[in-house]
Amino acid sequence: MTTETQAPIERFRRFLAGHGLPATRQRLAVAATLWASPDRPSAEDLARRVAARGSRVGLATVYRTLDLLVQSGLVHERVTGEGFRRFEPAAPVEASARCVCTSCGVVSTFPDTRLEPVVAIGAAEAGFRPQRHRLDVYGLCQACQQFDPLAAVR
Image 1 (cartoon, rainbow, N blue to C red):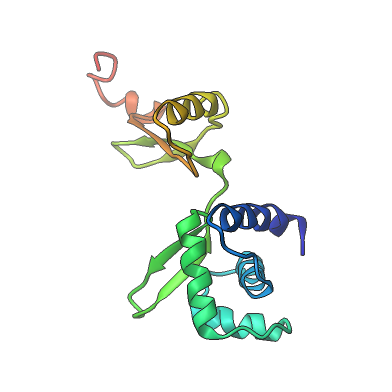
Image 2 (cartoon, rainbow, N blue to C red; image 1 turned 90 degrees about the vertical axis):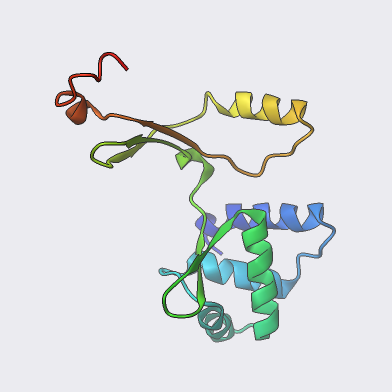
């Protein structure tokens, strides 16, 4: 297992433990195979890849594990026009703050390290245990501000 897959695997282990579920060899094999995938595989793709890596995992176990990974927030499910679901690892939490230009659509990210304590405090006050968060700031980028005469007024 590479260092890139170790951190998400550990977060998945903690998620499973927090929900009273065992971190079985099969579940971990499915998760590690997904994080090592260069694309967005389907459940069937993952089952074949896990088998190619030498683990015996049934398709039902792959589906149940993918559901747990999605529930944990570590994986996103994408429904495609192909008639089945594809799965991809969620972006790291560090990339969760974005500025989105409402004029041209350009998106830029910024580190939200100063927001983390605020999120933790707010969640604790609400009796909530956060798994992830996202901040989107909508407005005008520098280039579009030059062409909007009301940008300084807003």
